[in-house]
Image 1 (cartoon, rainbow, N blue to C red):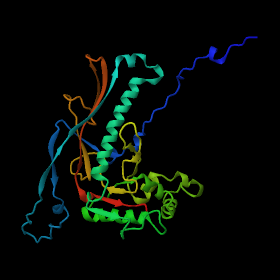
Image 2: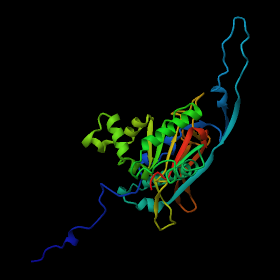
Image 3: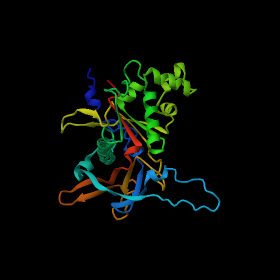
Length: 327
């Protein structure tokens, strides 16, 4: 008796309810979350800065009846920013797009690849410009005598960060509000006995079996900060077709600073991300623009992404970096 073979009754084709792509979570990218965007219609301009020393010096005094008021004042300076263009594009011949299976959502995949390319570049620039030693006025090194590395016995990250918080306040008159952790530093902190004890005593909902709920918000409460962030984005450092991944931010580092929640007048900030918001350039409020264009000669459609920004260090005194937090 003849029976049909499996290969005769079914032809394998891609299923339509899933596919695999390697897109990183937006929360892993911290550059814009650390330093908010300042919009400008021009690529370069200036901003005013009042001199800090005049504001923290007592020049008022008691006055006898009829006495003249003391004359005093303050200084004003200007600083500059200059946004530069970054960009990437992805080509796709129209024949490829026409033949692509619907489940691929090939145009959406093209768009997401372009977006992630710009995120990776901005995060890498942020790491090089802000997440390291010799950038901020205050540096601490766990491999020396500054503090005990957080994975070693008797270490207390809370005391280390609290001392740095106090030092920034004393230097500037402003309490820092953000702490950025490298991924290795964050992983070690969640198992540090001193940190666990502080969280249990500070956050009522986290006790005993609930320790797994300890997160960045819990640590922020302990340290009296607005936000604790973890830089979890990775980058492939090898040329095509190789792959060697590493964290973009120094995994064993940490950075504390005051960054204004939103740009405003009479407000200090460790840094800002100046962006060009221009109708002529077509950029949005983040200084970015995405578009498609056709090369008629090759019948190839390109998905293009551009970004105009300047990640600007505004005040080195408002930041501190912690190197070698992990042994």
